[in-house]
Image (cartoon, rainbow, N blue to C red; front, side, top):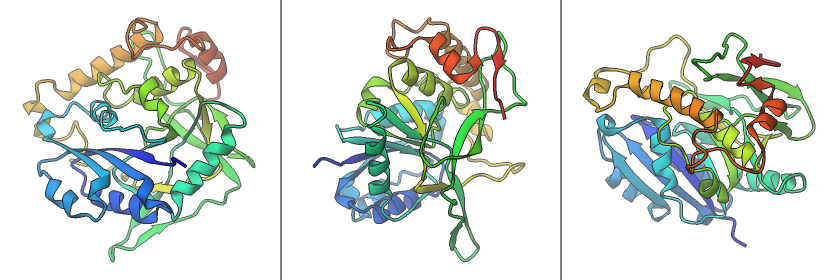
Length: 312
């Protein structure tokens, strides 16, 4: 049985990349089925390090200098080009810790959802983990009694000039996965066909990336489910702390052909074009299985009247 999984990893100046690769591989039940597509945006080319890993033949590695990078969506677009017809697709960030047998867990959840949808997507914001001073990994396992539902942040509004939103997770008591309207780019599991049907738009930047994925997926007949169990954990940045590992941080942005202010504006305009149907002649446009109006009714996010139901 083909249960191969392609893991998309776009990494930007992240010293946790090797940790993430090892965690995913070592914690998988069926290690021979795990394949990685890595786009490493870093000052140092780590190809030799990658080649030294025991599973290096399962890693497709591409190095990009940070001053040549155009952001996470652009990098994830490149990751998709490293896909090689694996059965399943998983996208995570390059600072992720995996539970034992995470691969089996996700496949079981996915197959359960096939009873509800022919094209299910498993996605939500993962719980966090920490690294202590002695390098011990610590995290709090979820209770298993709630599902993390993703909804827009109530402090943010949309208007004619800006349709970009940010989302947060809300605990919902449930004994099964919950149908949702939003995709978390840092944890996305689906059939490998997702890569062919929902190619990553390289003209997006950071915020708006997840909205584009969710809207395009929905209108192309995919169903987003927030899962009962999340078998991986994310190393979150601390609020209020300045990090030089953001794409827009430091002087390096000034060295690029496009600075981050322009990339952000271009991405905002790109999302508007998507929602207003101006990209429908391209592979990055809306689908034909459902309409944008159906998405608005389902999600409670009215991109035409600029109202949001159930923000949190």
